[in-house]
Image (cartoon, rainbow, N blue to C red; front, top):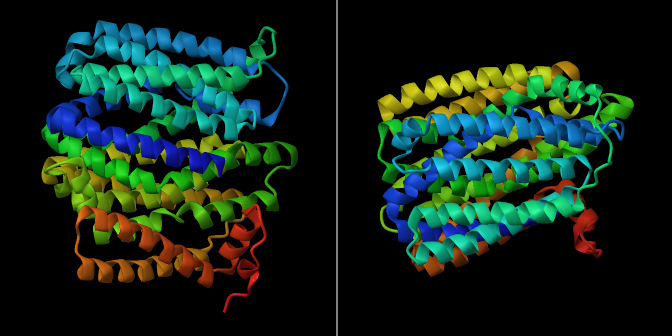
Length: 470
């Protein structure tokens, strides 16, 4: 819950900042900013190479070894290599981006890797509630600086400077909570990290492929202004997926510890089922609600952004599929089977790359959205297959069906009200609130499991929630 609320706070600050950036920079310059961050995300993978997941896994399962210091040494070495390569290829990189961005990228890479490393350690030390708070702190700090600098006329440079400041703030606060033993790492420590990282590096590539491969391919075929609209639709779709992300992040160290102590047990099977049950809790109504009022919500970002309405729906569905896929792969990684996720990720990355190039070339941004969705569906299928081979997988179809039913009732109510009261932006804000209330009220009525979960996590007892479902 701490992680989820932190993600909501982060999304709110990012939402406000994005509106200011799109309206102040305009579609073209905002699109350039998006391309810079996409390139940063890819070079950050090269600067990590699976090291982060390996550190989190080894730290979470045991107190033996000094994996933190070993990981920090390896991280510094990887960063140095990537930074030198960026500097050597700066002419080509600047030409691709359309902006003198190499110097910014080298600094951005340093603070991004350091901040990610600190959060990884905290997750591994079972301090997810602490590391979760760092993200909204970082995003809020970033947003405040970005808005101030962009409104002051510093343009893209101001937006990138705000990114650096936010990452540094999160890094410094997170470092305070990290516990490190003052001892030299052994050769075994490095070997244990390597044994996991040799498979987990592709997980990072797979995640980044899903998040921004389409953006990079779009940069070749369409203008930066269309990329800006596409990215806004993607950000809204990702907003609905944060609860599933919170589940994965919270369960990983717990499943990892359980598997290291007792192997794959029934308790782990139950945790996987729970993660599948609630992965779509918010994104299912988000998809249905987006179909009803998504065109109006996109107007908030400025003139022309409503053209991304259908892109928003396709990408939200892709996020839904990817969320379920993530629960399977997260569990496989936690039970120390990165070799299986490596196979899944290899197929996913290859399919995503080929489909993005072919479909974007033929159908533009609709092709990019379709490629992302098809890749997510393929990954979900493979994730279920491999997870079923090593453990008992129980898919909670009944609970997922009840979420869709509640979302259907919500859509009917919201659409009817929209026809009655119009579609002005202030009215739509109210409709979203009404729709949320209807969805959760219906879901509470339909699902005994959901009522029980809510009742068990509330600080006070609510007798109505304990009532038997009809």
